[in-house]
Image (cartoon, rainbow, N blue to C red; front, side, top):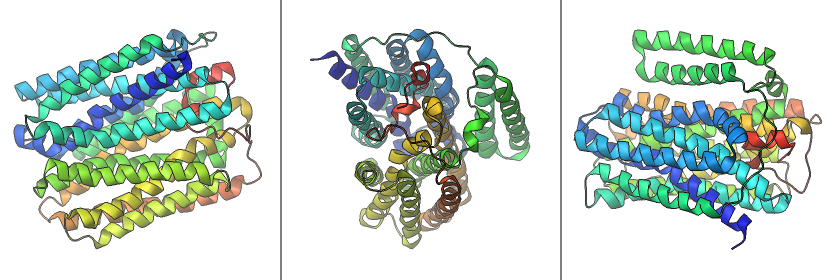
Length: 471
């Protein structure tokens, strides 16, 4: 097998496995609650310990991949998945929800390394734009597979054993994925650039404090909100003066880039929050693990179909139009949930599939729109920044939608789903209007890259900008 094919196999396997701790644990929330007595607030941290670590560290991990090499960082990230999984199994054995939070956080750190480094691997192994785009499509499919496959893994495990047994198979899969790295191509390291340590610390502190504020509420929440504001203000000031800024403020002056980053953030808010909300809400209605996995599987099947459709649509339609249309379709899917009155698979399946389809349209086009909206010399950085910013949505989703579920805990499934649907519909529609306005303002000011290269997620790798790659 050629080295480039082995690299693709390694990158896709690593990405799929790294998301399993997040999705499998979300699928097991009902079982975790029953075993530990944890309420909604404590369960929110099971999801958000992973998501916050990923959101806070995906850009620093990219910088680390530049200095140490993406193959090494990918292997280290898989090591984080193994360690987090072993800690998760231990947490289940001793019945410690705090140890489970630590386990998920360690797995999230590993996923941050895998996400950034695997994109650098693929970009370096495929100089040809068309081949690179095809490989990135495989990488994106592996990501969806990791998100959608976790609940099915949980279903299979909990049918015969306690919930914490979902972690040992993940550890074994991560170790197997690491073995595939032996044949992956080595990537030459670019010249070292200054590391924006202050910006990285401020960004991580801001994300963590914001999520803490939403989940905890009360006096502690207000204090955390103040810390988040101060951290983000400090980040803005730091980035204006940094020699090699983590998130150059100039990027956000581009209407197209701002629209793409906002749309992707809101869509991941819906997907990440929906995974948490629906899993816990359905388990409280005594829906079995396989039933939960089946319903969530419809969401991710729709997402995969939307990603495929987006690739074809972008050959005929401006990606910015596809992006806005995806938000509208996702909003329509969320709005259709307002008529749901039970937990039946038939009632939820097609509605979740429509929501997922719209989200897939957005996720598959957002990086390309971000890259094409800035000058070519900022293309790699724009993709990296867009990919990092959107992870904040995945962290906020369980926090915000979990608060809704806690408020409707005694009102029944229909009431909870209607509140969930109303919030998502409103957020998606408002985002569609804002994105359309930003895109309208940016018409004629884009900076198209090579037309044959759709530049989907490859631009998200921070390591690319050191090589001047505009993918």
